[in-house]
Image (cartoon, rainbow, N blue to C red):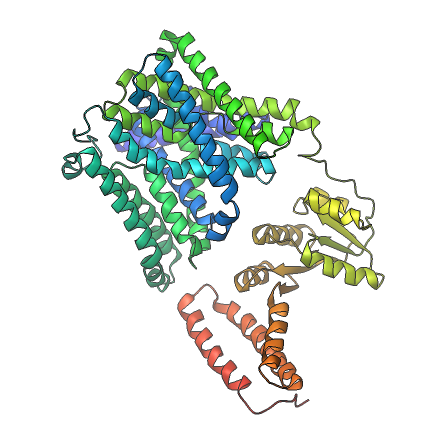
Length: 604
């Protein structure tokens, strides 16, 4: 590909996205469908501006790799454990039942059990990129149906590991080498069993390296204090994983997901997310455009009835299975239809798996092309299916998408955003002293609980400027941000500072990093949510150890003063890790000297 050709293709991609995606969003079709339509328009079966869709697809799949890496970063072990029932139970049942049913249908149609099982495993997966993008755009990811969809998608992403290991074992000649133009001669010379062992060893090496070596690498890079070098390292990490996984014939997106999962507890997690997010969004759009370009409409014209029948059968069968499982796990009708419609399509991993199965001669090349077009069309149908569900089911079910309340108390001096365990204490304290507050809470269950106890609160998302205006932010003296989402809290701070600069902002901080971000955003006052309760328990622990209550109270007061003073002082170089580490060691020594002194009473 020449330089001029590359520049022309880049221009065509960007222009098509700029023209078609806004139109699709305007007509409530969603950005994903817009990208697909843009790909069809510029592809070989549209205007023919770009004809080599396969070459672009290989590059665009990097967007899926980045997305899976970021998903892995978000899934800390405690969250995985909390979701274990839906991830393993619901996700496992969905993949197993779908695979068994589709395998049975394949054998009934006269295909071998090996080909039937390989195709069924690939078709049991759904599109993580498509579904998460749609749910986020429609604000449905936080609903119960959205969370169940995410859990199943997560299990499917993990299930790719055993599927990739099983696939070579289904080859008619199991001793035949696994041939893939992406692999080295050494890997290609291995039989299927040896290849499966190599895959396990490589994945294990990624886990070990991510767990024990990554912190030293990122710490060394962070010492340069050059953000662009850290960004380059982040991208190099993902590219390296991609090359390693292609070397052994494994989906690079799966390796990236595992690496993200391993780094979920890293102190560099948030920096990695910030660096990669812009690239992920752009490349994901490129991926969906490539899927649209790759739709073989010649094949569709030759086998119209068969392909459309396969698309309809795939969606219908998966819908039935998902509706049954959703009901089994206690979802309401509205949540269940959302859950089923969201993940009833084929997924991007199927493209990789069908190509892999074709290279192993588990399925014929023409069958792989037929199935890949079926999956692509099922992905294109999904946005329309979601629109129909939203129009005819969700819009009539208030329980899943309740309307925001109309606010009548617009003259109260204080607005409290978030009325959980933190916000309730502030609200009760103010109410007991006659200070009127307007309470905004976006959790419908929490609103119902508040009203059950006779308190007044309004359902709504306080990060929306229209709702803040309705709540009387222009007349209010103070906004208390007590929500437990750090990113949303920062978003609210920037919004209020921009539009209502005279309003005082008091914010709940999750930790020292969040306190720094709030300080940088310009809040008037912040308080770390667990600091006071933890210090109180520490005081009691010291009293149990035999210290006098008066001495412990004084030492706690010293600790508080010192901690708050040094935290504010550290903000000047919070992003410079070497200086921050040096400062932390210095203040730790200073704190020990203060608390171990013989002074036990406040001199003033």
